[in-house]
Length: 118
Image (cartoon, rainbow, N blue to C red; front, side, top):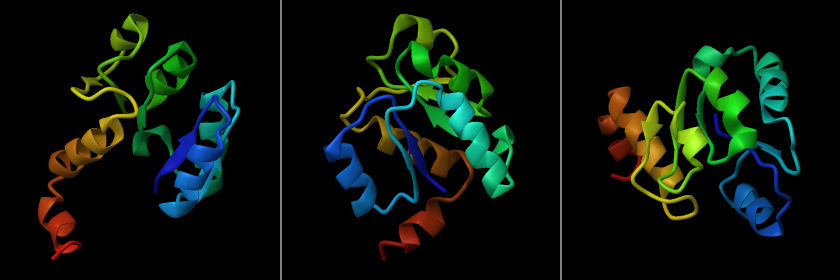
């Protein structure tokens, strides 16, 4: 499952979440880790099930708690220090896609993924 937990409030991001569709979408969130923990409780999951991406200081608690953490190339230097993976793409320019493709390869799901498009 995919969720968006963002500190900003944006109609553009809201519209994109509906298009995809992303069922778990939270805007204007200061304490992202708390929201994530509540969502995991609701879904009967743990942080062991979480891959997270973030680029700024308010993402640190969530990134530290996730099983694997990603940051885009243009993330804060403080956030870079705790990330498991620093992506080659900038935020808003393909970083999330790069993260997803990394996870697909890491989990050995390339064939399944490509079958979706066959």
